[in-house]
Structures are given as structure tokens and as C-alpha cells.
Amino acid sequence: MVAAKRGGNSASYRPSAVAEAGWPDWIDPAARRRLQEAIRHDRIGHAYLLSGPKGVGKALAAQAFAQALCCTNEDREDRSAACGSCRACRNVQRGAHPDVETFSLETQAKLADKPGGGSTLTIDTIRRLRSSGATFPLESDRRILIVDDAETLLEPAQQALLKTLEEPPKSVTLLLLADEPEALLDTVRSRCQEVSLRPIPRTAVTQALLSRGVADALAEEVATLSRGRAGWALDAIADKKILNARREERESAVRWLKSSLYERLVTAYTFGDQFGNLKRRSEVVGVVQAAIELFREEMLAAAQDTVHDSEAGGRSVPALSFSRAIAASLQCLSDLDSNVRPRLALEAMVVAWPTLEPRDR
Ligand SMILES: [Zn+2]
Image 1 (cartoon, rainbow, N blue to C red):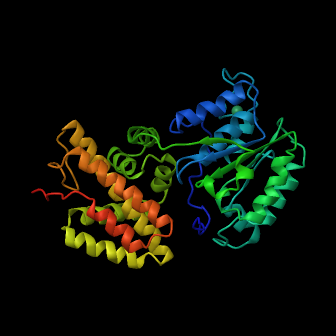
Image 2 (image 1 turned 90 degrees about the vertical axis):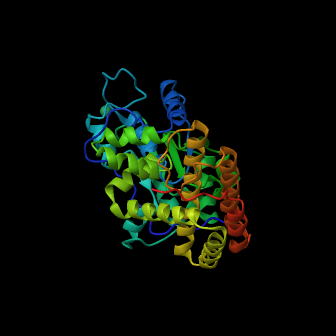
Image 3 (image 1 turned 180 degrees about the vertical axis):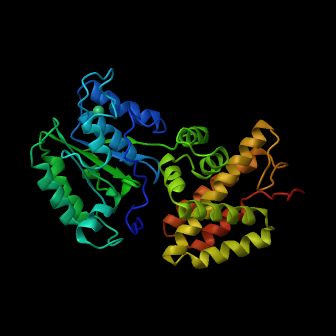
């Protein structure tokens, strides 16, 4: 069962009014290549499912794709990449192109005049999409309809969407963006070309931030906290609250890892008991994810035998122990997602963690 999304994604990175040429350099290169190849070879499908973890840059990829298709600049060397400066490019950028329309929790809330309201895309929204798909493109060869937050579509809405997918209007390309593609019906999924976007290396996130004028230290920190998700990193730069929440998760994970086995178990039980509360639930998951990252960093440092200013203090622990800890923590996340009792899932995880010697600073 997929947890419903709350509050829309109003915090998602919305590019500035200045359009950028081509594709953002931080989009998963494999996904980017696939979409560009489709344009180059005139094999643009009727429906794509862009999947990947929240904040990985699906909306940015969808926008770059739409922009490349709508760009009217005849002097482009590569027509799979937008020029970024023509009127069409700028209009896609500001969400004002007549042939590119986005349907998301945010647009749905705006239409209903209910800020933050609604955690699922409704059947009415899909009806709007259907009628939008039935109109002819005005300026481009096709209409590009983007369904963000597609994982929140409940079954009746997905069935309605399926009708469009089964008989796609000729001039329409549908882009479904989903954090959790497994929330979609197999019948929906199988009618889309799935392009999954993976997180990118931390250094690539740092570069993306530096090239946007973010100061060195902040770029490094945000990249470390980004889990390889450039979309999240850009959100975090724009909104301090997002950044601070992630900082707290990491600090909480550091304290948890540094504590004794007894204290680790106490924390695990406390988190387990809080798991019933929806708000606390995502925080608990966030802290476990932060712990996984800390183990990954420790493992890398141990494998490279580098002098590493370790936050968790695990320099004397062999790399293998960290990979076991990571496996146990991933198992815990998977258990928390299914029906395992939270206390048990968290307990099994912490007993698999290696003991970390607190280092003198
Ligand atoms: Zn252009």
C-alpha cells in the first residue's frame, strides 16, 4: 500500500523565468539519452512513464523533453535539445505554452481553489486531461500532457486514464511521472514506455549547484544530503525548511549510530511506537535513510582507507560490516513498507549494525 502524498508538490523546483538551453546536466544520463534518441529518430511514443525516487528530476526531464519538441529555433544543431531562448522555449519554461499542459496535485488544488488540498489525483482531473488531449495542437506538431504525481491515481482514475492510453489521440504524447511506478496498474504501465531515472553521483549534484552560483560549502553540504537527487537539491536551496529537515534527520542518525547497543534499541522502540503517526512515519524513514547514507560514506572511506573526518566515527570497522548494516537497513525500510511490526523491523536492523567507536575530536 502506497502512502498517500500530502500537500501537493508545491515545493518542487520550478525553474526561473530564464530558460536554459538543452538538457540539465544533472538528469540521469541514461534516461536523458533514451528520450533524446526518440526525438532524433522521430520515434516519439504516445506514452512514457518517467519513474524514479522523489526529487530525482522527473519534472525537469519532462520539461526538457517538452521544450525540445516545441522549440521553434531552426538553427539548432541538435533538434533533440531545446535552444532555450525562442518564444516557445520560454513559454514551456513558464508553463504558458498552449500545447504543453501539466496535471498534478498542485494544479488540481489550484483549480479546486483548495490550497494544499487533496492527496490523490481525481477522476475529474483525468477527464480534464482527456478533453485536453482531444484538442488539436496550436503551435507544435503535438500536445504534450504531463501527469505528475501519477502514483497517487486511485484505481477508478487509472481506469479512466487507461481509455486514453488504449486509444491515444495521434497528436498527443503523455508523460506520466511517478515516484512509485508499482502503484500503477499493470495495464497502465504496460502501455507506457518506462524510462527510469536513477540518482546521480554526489559530485554531479555539487557541480549542478556550483554552476548555479551556490556557494562552495553549501553546495557540498546539500549534495551530501541530496541522496543523488538533483531535483531535491534545487528545492533545498530554494527552501530552507526542506534543507533543515534533512539536516535534522542526519544529526538524528549520527546520534543513533554513535550510541550503545542498549540505547540503539531504546531509540528503535521509540521510533517503532511513533510509526503509527503519519507525520512521524516519514521522519523515521528519513532517519533510517540517513543512517544508510552514513554507512555508505563509512564503507567508502574504509574501502579507500582514506583519512575521513567521520561523523559516525567508524574508522576501525571493516567495510564488510558496513555493507551488512546497509543490507539490514534496506531490509528494515522494506519491512516498514509491508506489514512487519515497526518495533521488530527496527530492532532487527539495529542489532545488525556494527559497533562504532566514538572517536576523540
Ligand atoms: Zn527554442
